[in-house]
Length: 176
Image: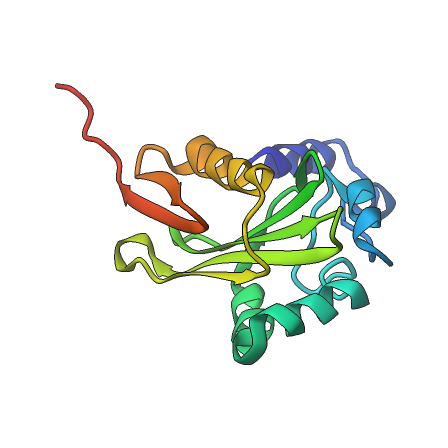
């Protein structure tokens, strides 16, 4: 939501293409470079997600799900700001205009130069959630994911982790 506000602000005041371009995440050469892109937006067909270090990790961790994730799922996704906590950089991607459906979190561990990925492949009720990459998930990664659900979807679902598995359940009904 924040990026929409920024975009509307720039559009209302006649922002140039150069100004809007500074908001897009640039390609990175290493995971450490990802820190410089925090606060920017990785567009689906933009340079950040096509960075060779990321593509290499997508292929390594996703295996046979690579094509489904990179070539199909990402093309349907909205673009959110890149966030970080400690040694973890998080790229959240989710299908546009479908609510708590088809979300993923690309997690870059700057200490190990490895990627982890948590992918909600369907609606949250189906519990089709897969975690890819080397385990365990860092506490920083879990915090980034839980904070995202809390900020955006706490009225719909409650998110928690059971070891490295993301669990989603219906949010408690409000008191009447």
